[in-house]
Picture 1 (cartoon, helix red, strand yellow):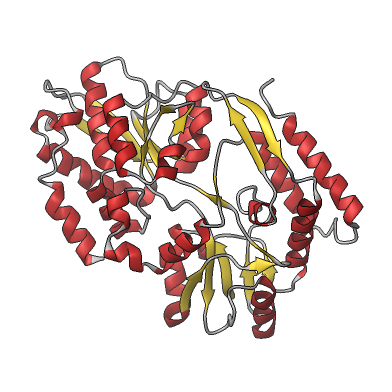
Picture 2 (spheres, rainbow, N blue to C red):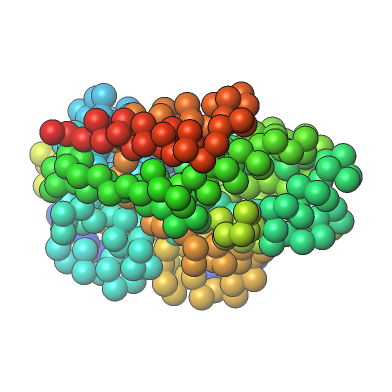
Length: 401
């Protein structure tokens, strides 16, 4: 970790991105939104950027704590009053494009992004063949954290639950979340995705939940929730008496502290005879449309800097986020990171997260809530298939027809 921080500090002061900028510079104001945990780090990087690029030394950059989960909603509600540069998760791309809240990336910058970043992260910032953002991370997925003094076989859900029950410990997974819930359905071989046009509208659905595989997935979810060790949740910070949890890299520090010397992580387990899948995703930085060319050049240059190899490594050193930059991914600390190694193992079974209509998430929550309330415990396969037919039919009503 110290090597990463030393590298970024050494390089930040000499890194120049003048190729992205106007020679005229800019001395006005820019507002930046990032996750709360990265505010101080981002402020430091802004100062490093200004020191390395004198033409921007006099501009004022305000860094505010607005996380990836809130930034899109705020931008869509008030584009003019929103940040000039903001971070967000890939599932918000279509909404932001449709709202006119994102400026497409300048072609020269787009070529550099495509050459230097994970191909899936490049696909995640692209819609209708146009690139709209700068990849920042390749770590927005989930896997298993566990206490290796309790869990004897992290590769099997049945064994995990048995170990937890025997030890009087808890297993956490948020099955009433449309994000985590896909672990069962995608893992069983089902599909649920939406096609968008160049303006971000949802124009078609590809679905196979209402199938034999879908029934298998739903039955596995029901059986998992029946265990006395099961607790619905996905936040290590809120977990108590926990021996295993499905969570992400953002909770690595908390998991390390909770499990101590018994801290471990792995890909998701198998359940009901199939490997759990799920979503893989990315965080990115976007720029809203600008009327001032000099300000736009400054925003382009700063966004490029904040997503560069060195800054991605520095961000990892501070908050543990996994880089999308290909060179940064080969860093020794990244390769040896327990959580990121588990995520890399899981990604082979994941589906890159595309664009989903907002109503999908509440519909998936309702399905999970029915499981948690034991409403489907006595349903036979035919009844479960009808539940999934209704789920699919409802999803189709969300298309922008």
